[in-house]
Image (cartoon, rainbow, N blue to C red):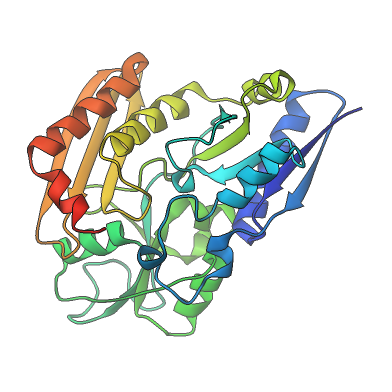
Length: 305
């Protein structure tokens, strides 16, 4: 019997994602037994400070990566949007499984959409990207920080702490709470975070056994999409808490990438769209980033630091 150990954060969402990957591996590979080891990250510990104020690089990944490098786990399952674009020496992205809905969701007890919110309504979010695009669309809204795991944030919304909140559609679905989603926010209003809705399986780059296993659950379409999105993010030198959005879609062999950079106050939103052969996903992402830079993106990003 072959065995693998997955490292996972301890939230309901993280464990659900890790169990999903474990099941996929066990189904794809006969005589494989996969176990999960829970590892707490800095992002799970610090819950009383806005993410934008405590830095974002490795906030939800550093401890998992340390365990990988030490050999106490064989692979780590991440929400790929949380994974920095540059990997520590010795680690690599082993696989991207099929992707869930990449967009953002509107959640509220009383209202059906952003448009239905009354003037001055309170909306919870811990993301500068969401905050900027919300203000660009509805400058009258009162935006408040909303931290915690997905289930915690859903409970705060149900308890009336805010009139509404914006969360990743995929995270809500993965914990079995699709019923909480009032509506999907269209990408014309809010461009998602790069790689949102995708899982990233991180492994040691010389572990040929685990790399071979991961290849069995890798999805080429999802990989092309997130490659373009993360290339754009990397070229712009942005982290997951910088107001940068990127969404790629593959149709047949063509990839279309929508990318944006916003000022924190939402008064400036730069958007570009690039198309090309999906086999050149990284180049498409780089081109989109270069166009955004010529439009003034660098100064908007610098203002968040």
